[in-house]
Structure formats: structure tokens, C-alpha cells
Image (cartoon, rainbow, N blue to C red; front, side, top):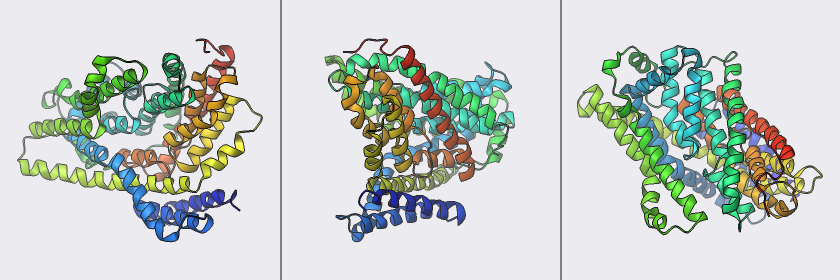
Length: 472
């Protein structure tokens, strides 16, 4: 019974969330909370040491932990989105992008921007910054919103999953080669780029253009901004829009501070550089996502106030409306994280890992499969990557390929099939203004396409060049 109990809890959790959210159309926050409570209750019935009286507090704690990580960023993202859209800043950036590409290739500018920003910045935060641009692009072009959402997601999540110094691949590299992290960091970055760029093209541009032919997602009111607001901005002349420099400043500030912190932390972890160690407390402070997005929100809001030239009381009311919308999104996202935490508490990851660890398949495919199943079961990319990294670390010395490929295989499996137990699913749905079905068809599918396409490239690279950099 102990071995099958996690599978029972997992199965009940899937059935519950589908019934509440899809069949019965229960409000999302309530449905996710009920699902988390139900899984927690099942855990208490199946596992010794877990008492039923502790379950509500456990769900609340998991909700609080998730809210602590996403609350302020999502609220500030709501202010950024509202301010950049209604001030015309998003429209100005989109018009500048379009000056370099045709309307038919507008997706390329969004894809490149999302890909570059996601190397130093968490994907969630990149999506907060890029979603207003995708919405503004849709309002200006008149269609292809499905395509714009997919290219922003495909480019961003690929770079974030595979290219250090983003935290996931960096942490796995440290975990599987704790004494030689600095020696494989460079190769991991190069291999990561070699995997991420073509995988992002496939899951972003190619899949986006394919699915765009079959799904037409309309613009909806989202993040405190109405469709009418977007259409009004599109009709404005260039002279009534802020400059490009002022428009892009919130994005530049957030990315610069976060990237500086990431770079300093990466270098100080690998090398002893006294000058960087001195500035590290400053970059950690400025690069903290809660502070950097707050500063970006202030800058965007001041541009909004200047461009619309209305009384401060009206400006305050508009931003308060945006915060209300952001609060709802933050609550849904944190509830999704709590549901995933209850599934993880059932120990489904351990069952998957122990079952697959001794299968007679290639080590890279084994790592990918373990990470993929753990990811689908409990929702968190980070948990899937770190859990799999710990399992596979003892195999590094005998696996016959460079460990950078193992880092890639783990990341490839961990990004697969983002669904209801992943907070990223709810961020894309709510900030993008999508329905649950639309999010499954676009976001969930693109993460799956990204996972399989990147695995194929990893296997090709590792077969042709098993140890291109030398590793001892």
C-alpha cells in the first residue's frame, strides 16, 4: 500500500482538479484550493505521520510560500501592464519593433526579445514584461494573438531552461559536479545555447505559426486594461506617444538590475573576485525581483501619469483597479502552487525516481524521463530538475558523455507539459487573458513540443560529439 499510495493521491488530485475546473466550472481559486485540501486529506488517510488536522494549515502554508514568491511581482506586473498599455509605451515599443520587420514577421521581434530577456531573468518576470507588448501587437496587427503568446512563451522558457546563468541549469550543474562547477559552466552555456535556440524556434516560431492557423484567441480585458483601451492606443499618432527610450525604461531597469545580480552571484560562486564580493550585497538588493519590478512599476506609472495628464486621484484609481486584478491573479497562481505542493507531499516524485532509476535505457533518456514525470506529477520545474539532478549525480563519472548534456536532458524533461499544478500555467492564462482550454492548447502544448524537440537535439549532439570539451 505504501508504494501505491502516492499514485492514489496523484490520481485523485488529477480527477479533482479536472472536475472542479473543467466539468463544474468552479471559480479557479476555489477549485484549486478545494483540490489541494482534498489531496492533503487523502495524504492524511494514506500516510502515517500526516494528521488530518494539519492539512488545512499545510495548504495555507504552501499557499503563503507561493504568494511570498509571486505576490509582489504579479502585483507590480499588473501596474506595469496597465501603465505601459494606457500610456502608449507598449504601443511605442511595438511600433519600433515593426520598423525592423514586416507585419507578417512581427512574431520574430517578440520572439527575439523574449529569448534574450529570459537568459538573465526568470521566465515569469519576462512574461510580465512581454505580455503587454504581445497584447499591443495584437491590437495593432488585428489578429495572430495565438502566435504572439506562443512566441513569447517559447522563446522565454527555452532560454530559461537551458542557458546558465539562469538558476535551473546552474543549480543542476552545481549539483552533479559539485567540485568542478566552474569547469563545466562555460561548456554548459555553449551547449545550452546550441539546444535552446533551435528548440525555441521550433516551439515558438514554427509551432506558433502552425497553431495560429487553427486557434484564434481574441483580445480580452486583462490586467486592468480593456480591449477598448488597446484599440484607442493603436489609433494614436506617434506624436502622442512617449519616446522609445522612456517607453522601454521600465523593462531596461528591471532586466539590468536582475541581470547584474545574476552575473555577480554566478561569478562569485565560481571564482574568488574581491571586487565583486564587495558589490554583491548591493546587486542582491537591487536585483531582488520584488524591488526591481517595483522600481519598474513606479517608472511605468509615472509615464502613465505624464502622458494621460489627468488628476492624481484618477491615476490612483486606475492603478488600484490594476492591483485588484493583479491580486486575483496572484491568489490563483499561489493556489495552483499549493495544489502542486500537496501532490509533491504525497511523494510521487520519489516513486517515479525509484521506479525508473534502474531501467535499462540510455542515461540521458533516463534523466529526461525521470524529470518529465516528476514535473507532470508535482508541477514545479525547479523541484523536477533538482530532484533528478540528485538522482543522476552518481552516474556522471561513468556515463561517457559530457555532464553538460546531462544538465540539458534534465532541463528538457523538466519543462514538459505545464498544466494545472504549475503556477506558470496560471500566470500565462491570467496575464495573457486566455481561457483554460486555450492555455492547454497553446502553453501546455508548446512546453511539450519544447521538451521533445530539445531532447532530440541533445541526443544528436551527444552522439556526434560525446565529449567535445573534455571532462575529467
